[in-house]
Length: 564
Image (cartoon, rainbow, N blue to C red; front, side, top):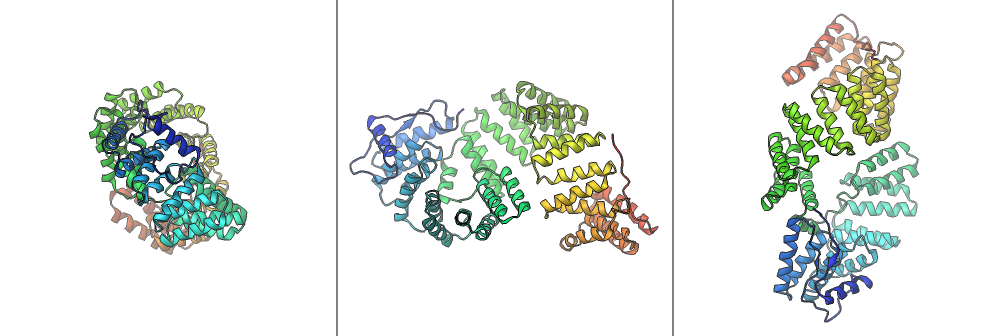
């Protein structure tokens, strides 16, 4: 079922004329005296999701029952704003403003409604709202954004600074100042403002692209590359502008799948798992025969680790709508994970067969086959996935891992290199490429890969640890450098004396010939692993074996296992 609006069907000619006037002139201009309506605009409801149809019909009836009530018009207009019915929302909100001209929310929501369609009209509405209330930071930031789009940098800067005076952590405020600084050519100020926006939680494409531009203008190619990679991963519009008024509307009036998704995402970001589950549980109670919310609940339960509850909901959803192939694929993966391997793979195959052009279905089948230790079939299926989506970094990386496990190190190397080209900040791709090179005896190339990765991702502990390990344990004396490895590891150990870091540091100490120190460090790692319990048994045995070498005054060297 559709989530968004359809072509409008206004109930009366008067409403149609009013809406046309709003958009033909200035949809955010002050209402004309005497232009009161008695019938609300109602869009074509066919094809809309059931809860949205109910919400519109109930709110429209409330307006018809009491056309003089601003609150009734405002609620209907708010429902339309939340669900992107622009013309209807403006018509209703202007009626609410005519009846309650002192209420700030009505012109504010008009501005929100036309924000993407008409910047001038949006700014006009926001200025009307500002005349009624001047202490709402999101409004100031939106005024700044509109002014910036119009090229009025001085007025935009003033608005953003007013917003930050109210809320100093407002991401949109700092982003706006950074964009203004870029426009003025003040790159240093731009970077300062944009980094501050990022520190306060901004993760949108808009922010990261602005950072990439600023860093590139500064000549910092590595920082620019990191920002570009972050932009590729980011959503189009993240929480740049926490807006309590609008978020409350989403929470109370957002009844479609997309709006409920927004609520769930926000609750999960806050760590409120129960509230997130409650959103879909309420949707299921409201429409128990509608498959979509049942499946959404199942997928969320899976994400939160409730495998049995997820399987229950997904099976119920597929009974309601057997054509939900994505749900079938997810159910298949969960069944494989829970041990029902044959049943799960059968579902995964059925989903892939039903949607032959869908690379995601084949990818999930491949992951199910891999989990079932059917690696050859998984590799072949990932190849089919990549024929459909050659730039899928997840499929490239997974195929590389499986090829490496099969000993096909050269083929794995090629896949990891492509995965890194597609997603340069993928830590595990760099590490696995280095491992594949190491296993082929190309330790100098492995070290080079890890050094480049560390330049790109200087704060990734796993990359630093992998590089230190190669330097500490290389059998080639020309590459082995225990002191360099110790230098890399020392800052990490100052923050956390984790067993794997201690193990690598002991190997580095042994590489320098300081076997007494290596034994002490290994003993510390062994003690920590014994306290950790059975989960660290494998690493414990390895560290104990290495300690025995140090006791015989021998370093630990990794002998490459050459693959095909």
